[in-house]
Image (cartoon, rainbow, N blue to C red; front, side, top):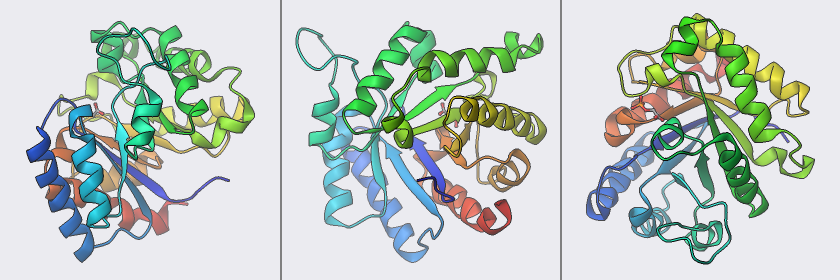
Length: 260
Ligand code: PGA
């Protein structure tokens, strides 16, 4: 089943201790009660140590968000110091996992092979995966972004069992736009979204949601949805401020009718 609903994911990265995370969760809950999102699914992605507190508050206050994790091990259990498994996440009520975020690829040596193995572990456990792809500034300068992103998609998703396809979402995040305040142009996003959709479709994954990430803000969200043709956002910095995060969600909701 494919969905027309938009999706906004807030990646809190390595910010907020559990007390601060609960506070932000509560603020999101209050705003959502006053202004519920009609057409937009929402996921928040706190640091591991905040997951228990955030899932508790979301359950007890019935906040309409799902919870994601920023990373997970490709292994089930055992001697992997510092790692977290999919079953541990599931037990906490987590339903989404980011895989292959550029910060993990560049800072923690997460190569294509590890991305592919991790993605398989995530979907096999029943969790939804957000596969992050995107080129660096040098690749874009050489106009090689389409080949680069195709290679990332093929390596991560090639040969994936058909039964897991519905658990897959792709986020296009050009590295040069992450945390820089420099958003990709609507036309660049549209071209890449189209490219990703055609690669996915050739792999039997037509209709999967394609998100954009990289300096998304309340000011640029609506124009990226309409000009970029995306199905939502992976938001970093702006997701740490409840009002900004909700303004991005409202912008998506407002664009829904005109989107398809
Ligand atoms: P940003 O981060 O919104 O702060 O640019 C996006 C991301 O890394 O997912």
